[in-house]
Length: 265
Image (tube, rainbow, N blue to C red; front, top):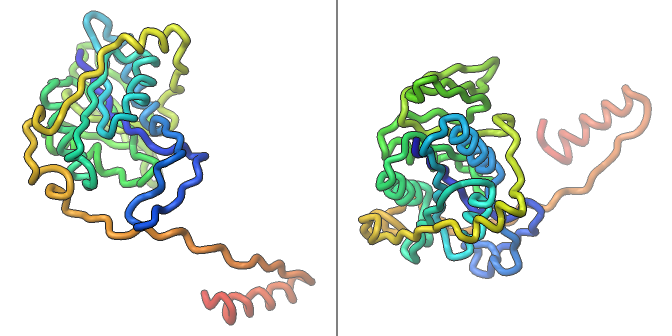
């Protein structure tokens, strides 16, 4: 079985984010980058499926971005993935989620995967659109935000569970399929020292826009329906006020503050 995993490199959650001078991007210097946390669950699940199926099964991780993305690909290889595909081209800069999905779909299409995993969303933009768009472009089944996974005995069907309002949904679908993963699906493994050493020798194939057969009208700003015009900082927090006194008096004072100062009632 050929298993693919979409991963993204994102700023570390503990990194202080600053908006750049032109307000169209963040300041990239000095930022520590890591694998998107939800993608760690995707990599782990792919490795578990490979172990379950056995034989000549393989796991390939795919990511789009600049040269630094190789570090994150190597992290996935150190966890146990067999090879990596780096979708890298200056033409991919300044593009929206749909253009990104188009490039990733082209990379996956050339590999003919039986099963693809992805994180449910990237923590830098929280868009949650790329996995769905990729599946649509590949014309394969897609189930989002799964927290349970079961592969059939003949390896041709999966049964997954996903949380919905008021309950849980059980979905069965035939392969090929793309599944996005959320916390609780598994416990991602740490890369061992041996895995880190082996990762240095595992192949990372670089794919440009031309390699994927993508034209200027399909990627970058030319292929984007959404353009980022400006980034705005979060509003400063207001002064915190404590209302003291007896419960009834405090309640009356609180209502007055909410009505006259906060103007929310």
